[in-house]
Length: 183
Image (spheres, rainbow, N blue to C red):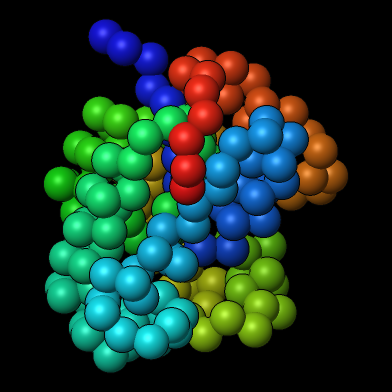
């Protein structure tokens, strides 16, 4: 089996996929692709957040759009770092694509930390469950964690010093096929 050429960061929203992904791509001198940024192009509309698209389209249509965007991103040549959307793992088709084309890194932080990061973020995100933000995250975590574990194995903690998580990601990236390409 050929070595993967893409390091895909997976995890709940607020886990650091975009922030750490950008930093890692810079360190590795690889392109960085944020799947959330690709969605509006596939929607054929003006640029807006993934959260706005999710609310506008509804979850089934949004996940279909996300799966198409993921397939197109994964077809790009060369090595790169990919930040997936937190819910990319919701579709079996998307999980299969990630497993086939990527080495996945599962980013994880305590729910209280995720809730604080999300509350402090200016990016619009629709609610995905009932109760407080932390209760909503617990519901989503219960559903998604088995998929994250299946794709990546053990999680990488993203609390504390970002350099620690970046070192773990750099070790994982060593298994990604080197090479240029555009993101």
